[in-house]
Image (tube, rainbow, N blue to C red; front, top):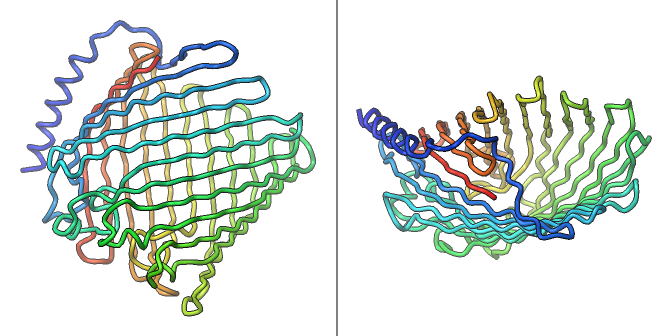
Length: 410
C-alpha cells in the first residue's frame, strides 16, 4: 500500500510539472551551437535541473527502506579550440543535490577536465587528458552498507580524484600494422569518515599498456593487447597493505567498422593479480572486454558493452572480480520525441585471498522519454528499477526510481 501511494503521488507530481513545461513552440531536437569567440574558439554553457523520487536511496532491505525526493541542479560549461590539426577543450561542471529526508546527505560534486587531441602527420595521433574531481559515495554505497549505513554513519563518503590519461597511435587507414601505447594514473583520496575505514580505500593506480593492430580486411583488424597496472595504497594498516600489487592483463581479439551499420571490438584473454604480500595467492581469471554498436536505421542505435576484470573493493576482501553487461537502445521517433531503454547486469565476487567471501548480483533496467521542443531544450521523463541479491544477510535491496529532468543549452 505504501508503494502504491508513493507511485500515485509521484505520478501526479510529474504530470503537473510536465503540463507546465510542455507549453513551448516546436523547433528541432537538442543541437546546441554554442557561442563562437572566433579563431576556432567556442564556449558551450548548459544547465540541467531534475527531481527524482527514490523508493530506497540508502539501499536498505525491505524492512528498513524509506523513500526520498532528491533535487539536483548541474550547470556545465565547455570551452573548445579547433586549430585544424588539433582539438582542445576545458570542461567544468558542478552538481548539487538535496535530499528531502536528511540534509546531511546533500552534496556538491565538481569536475574540472582539460583534454586535447592532435594529429602529427597522416600516421600519428595523440590524445591526453587531466582531470580533478570532487565526488561522493552516498550512504549505503560506500564503506558501510546495509542498516549500518543509517545507524552509524551521518554523512556520505566524500573523495577527490586526480587522474591523467595519454595515448599515442601510429598507423594509417588500411595500413598493414598499427600500434597504440597508452598510460594513465589515478590518485584517489577520501576527505571524511576516516574512522569508518575510508582511509584504507585511498590508493594510486598507475597503468601502462600497448595494442598492436594487424590489417585483415578493409573493415576488420586483428589485435593483441598487453596491460600492466600497479596498485599502491596510502594507509599503513594491514587491511590496506594486503591489497597492494600488480594486475597484468593479456588480450587477443579484433575490431571492425562497417560504415553506417556496425562498429565494435572484442577482446578476450586473462587477468593475473599478483600481491606484494606473500600470504595472498595470485589470482588468475578469464577476462574480456566487448563493445559494439549497431544502427539498423539512422534514427535507431543499439549499443552493448560487457567486461570481466579486477577492480578495487569498497571494503570487504582484498579485491573484486566483476562481470558486467550493459545494453542501451536509443530511438528517435521524430525531431521532437526520442526514447532510451537500458538493461544492466553486474556480478561481483569479493575475494579474500583465493576464496570468495561475498557474491553480489545487481540487475537494473530503466527507460527515458525525451521531448525536444527546440535545439536548446530537452525535457526528459525517467523510470527505472535496481535490485541487488547478496549472499550476505541484510545487503539485498530493491529500489524504484522516477523523475523528470530539464536541460537547457546555448
